Structures are given as C-alpha cells and as structure tokens.
Length: 533
Image 1 (cartoon, rainbow, N blue to C red):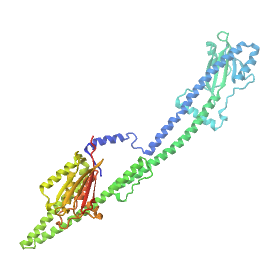
Image 2: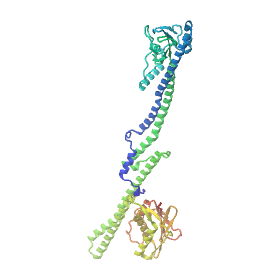
Image 3: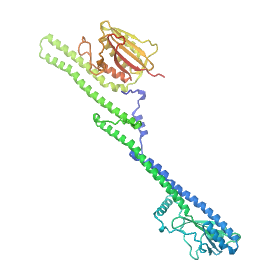
Image 4: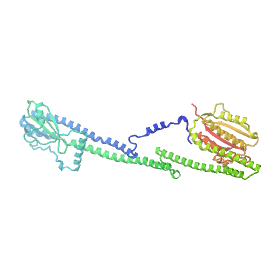
C-alpha cells in the first residue's frame, strides 16, 4: 500500500512540468526503431564525410605537384641554357626520360621548336576512357559526383594545340621571366600538369621550355583510399544497422508487449492478462516489466478484494434486514403488548446493528483513499497509549478488568502517522482485549524499542486465538466473539480496519501466543520510528 506524505505530493501543474521534460517535440511521433536507426545512420553519415576530406587531400597533392613541376621546369631551363646548342637535344631527351615528362621548346614568337615526343620518347600518353573497364568508369562517376557536391572548380580539358595555337603558360613565362604552371583535366578525369619556364640569361620573349605530365598516380591514390574507406564504411554500416536492429528488437519488442498488456488491463481484462516479467533482464526494461506485472497483480487482487467485499457486505446486511423484515411483518399481526414490545426491541437492535455495520463499511471502503491523502506528522506513541489508558480508566472498565502500561522510555517514541487513525487502532485492540478478558483480568500493554521500530504489544488473559485462526481474524466480517456477548454488537471489521491503518503507516500487526505461556492473546503492532533531523 502506498504511503503518501503531503510534502511529497505534487500538484497537477508540477506533473505536467515533469511530463514536458520527457516529451519529444520534434520526434515524438517517430517510432523508437526508426529513431535508433536514424541516430546510427547519422553517425555513419559523419563517417562518410571522409570522402570529402579525400577531395581536399587530392587538392593538396595537386598543389604540391604543381610546385614540383615549376621547380623541375626551372631546373630543366637552367640545364638547357648551360648546355651547348648541339647538345641540347640529347640533354632534353635525358631530362624528359628522367623526370617522366614531355618536354617542348618554344621560341620568342611562341612557335614550337622541339618536342621530346617527336624525338622518339613517348612517355606522355593520355588514356582513352572508352577503353577502360567498369571500375574506372565508376571511379570517374564518383569523382564527378564528389566534385559537384563540394563545389570543386573544374579544370579545363587538356587538348593538343594545332599549328598556330600557343599554350597559355608560354607567353606568361616569357613576359614574367618566371616559372608558371597550369592544371588540366585529361579525358579520363586524371590531372595533367603543364609548367613553363624561360631559359635564363635571355631578354623578355626568350626561348621557353614547357613540361607536361599526366599525374595519374594522384587519381589512383585518391581512388584507392576512397575504396578502402568505402569498404570500412560498408562494414561499419552493416554492423551498425544490425546492432541498431538488435537494439530496437531488445527494446521495442518488449515495450510493445508491455503496452499491449497494459491496454488489455485498461479494457477490463485484468484477470486474463499475463504481463511478461522478463526475469532474465536486469536492465530498465526488466525493471519496467516486473513493475507492470506487480501492478497488474495488485490490481487483480484489488478487484478480487472489491468483489469479495461487495459479496460480504451483501451477505452481512441480509441477516439484519431479514430479521428486521420479520419483526416488522410480525408487528402488523401481533396484538399483545408484550410481544409487540419484544418485536420493537428486535427492530431497534437491528436498526442499530445496520447503522453500525453501514458506518464500519463506509469507513473501511474509504480508508485506503483517505490514508493516501493523509498528512503524516510525528506522533508520540507512548504518550498516546498513556492518554488512551487514562481516558478508559476514567470512563470505568466493566467486570473489574485492570490495565497496565509498561514502557520505560524517557524520550518520546515518535512515529510518522495520523494520530486519530492510530488511536482508532489501539482503542480497537484495547476494546477487544476487554471483551475477551475474564472478570478481574489484567491487560498488559508494553512498548519495546529497537534501532528502527517500536513494538506495541497488547496482552489479555482471555482464551486466546487458535493458531489456525490468527490470520483469519484480520479478514473483513470475520468476528470471533465471546460466547456470553450478545450477537450483532460487532461488525467484524474492527481488526481488518486496524490492519489497513497499520499497513498504511508502513507497519505490521499480528496476533501471537503469550511469551509467558499463560492463556490469552497477544496482539503486536510494529511501527517504524520517525527519522528526525
């Protein structure tokens, strides 16, 4: 049974605030499976950004090769300028072969005067893309796609110049007297780098040497790294998707089963619903499953108790109603004053009995809800027992029954609770002990304290409670009364109400045999001590 304290209760507005903290404004309607996949795919998309990093990597390599081409062109120009005119052709062939470039010389007018290809060295050959396989075509397509996405500047297409056409590097090198370079795009999308440098020691418009190289190794390196990254991304993607599906399966499926069971409980099918407890799971899903299972079992027990209570109420009220109806019908037929008085006495007793029964039933039915809203405060249980005994002694105790309280404690014995409810419990126990006590009997009330709780025991010298009936006496409408007591003076709800109140205070109540082996019953109440700061 839940114990609610006013200081811990929250208003509906506060509950709404807590709900808003758990709400998902932009993804609340998206299933959990899709959200898990989306999060993992987003992480994969970040990994896929490595493809765009490779584009910047390629750009840095190209820039480095451009600077290298300028240095080579300048060094070749210096070497050719220092050589004898007759030895320049052989030197140009050697330099073209060693650098892997195509060398061409242009005069002051921009006309080509020498070419390593014409000299028989064919180390500069462009690849026809139509002759390549599907892998190369896929690589070119991916190159074009990434260039489009990142907005890379597209290099001009490399084409051989016809007679009368001049390479753009040549006049710039002639005018600036410095090495210049240009990056071109071959038909197969590999870079072609041309560099031009004037021969030193000459005036403006002097002879210029131009180198050209098809840097296919740059594209091959980038494509190889891209292929490796693709393999990594593929493996990680498959693993991530499988793990996401596994995670969704282990989270979403049990949640759906629990939600379905909760819906069936809500539809009034609590008796036939089996909420899975997931005993093998020690995570939050397992905790939720067991909490829902316990909740459904408690609800089922509450429904059963309510139905049993309704049946018991009907049964208990039928007896006085039947007696009352018989007495009323007899009043209409009896004319003797003595019999009429007896019937009227029966009517009065039955009316009192019904009134007492209805009052007890009303209190028992509302007790759980009232305890859940009660404001619990520290209560000195020792002072309460003393006050109850003094009040009862002043009213007088029938049949010479004596009462004795024994609690050797100077400090207050504080428990958290509602004093009027706890008084009702101990009044009930004291009345019960008086009812069963013999003439001149003794009722002993003792209080014992340990580290965390206080034990209150009420002992009488009556016949005691048989061991097989000790749990039964706490059930509703179970009344085991002394034989000399008039029938109908008790509803059978007193001890049931007492147990409900004690359990609502997080305590326990039970009936035991007396420790001194004497006849009598011993009712024991255990309540947790209040933790005072």
